[in-house]
Amino acid sequence: MRAYKKKAVFVLGMHRSGTSALTAGLQYVLRVSLGPIENKGSKENPKGFFENSKIVRFNDRLLQRCEAGWDTYGSGKRINFSAPFWDSSKLEALQLLQDFYGTQDIWAIKDPRISVLMPFWDAVTCDFGARVYRILIVRNPLEVAHSQCVRHRTSPETSDVHLSGEELRYTLNLWFWYNLVALSNLPDDSNIIVGYDQLLSDPKNVLRAIGKLLGLSPDPTGLDEYCTSFLDKNLKRHTVEKADIDAYTTDYPYVFDLYNLLRKPAAGCWLRKKTAQKLIAAQPQIAFLNSWTGPIYGYIAVQRSRLNDRLKEIASNKETIASLRKELEQLKQSLVSKEEPVHDGAALLNDGKIV
Image (cartoon, rainbow, N blue to C red; front, side, top):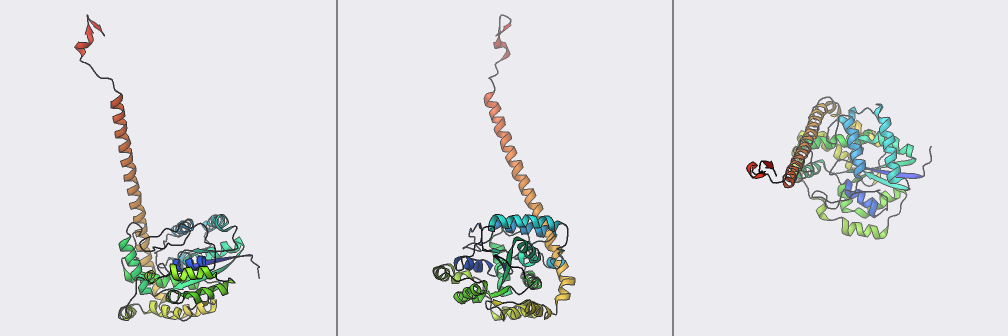
């Protein structure tokens, strides 16, 4: 077995599942380096996203090369990680790791997109010389769907043209796919599973358990700061009633079946590969979803992504045209101000000479 001198932690899970709050705990409490993060808050994440924006943009490009996107349901099942372009992408990813984490003994990357790109990042990180740990955080799928809906509605400037947000049913299936693919991509036993509710209700024990599994001791000051200052009841702004869950469970039983199965081991403990495989085998609707629902949702999401790119291009062209018009008007005014006054032709004649 290969001996690694470095450790890499990848925070996985569906968007709006608490990945940011968990990653903040890794930084505050376990002193895990996150590299250069642009931790600006927003309406949906007032305390920040705790992610490396360059890594996120890189992952977006990877998905685009697969004609997929972060909200493309089912695309993870169709990604061919042996395609030729992955070799050049791997070199770029290795350079990113060297630039951001080359001097760190342990570091973490949070980006839900890695849930469906884990085979690629596993290989890259192994070549980088770090042992990979994965933390999967799980939240009630209906809460996730409502949270995504609010984000889409209140931040239209940052929410792309996609179904996840404006359609609860789509986001429920997206939640199912993210977690299903994340489970399918686990290559070994170096995985930890955490429940979002558990993180909020018992953060000290959750972070201590993660620290023990990673071989790290919690910083007492950081732990107190995280529990008293960072975490608060406002972090969870979307809760659902049992009646609502029951209603959606009737139409989407496979989503809530998987959630209930994941809740059992979601206690800050190891998630063995064998356990993950058993969870996958317990899903009776997978064949149906992959053969029908996935491709349809995937096609719609890809087309919407392309439309969004086109709209951005049009908006950019409009800005360029407006800027050129402004420059042209300024140029006209400049030329007018430099023109010499024009006199009447008769006044210029003196004894038949032009003066």
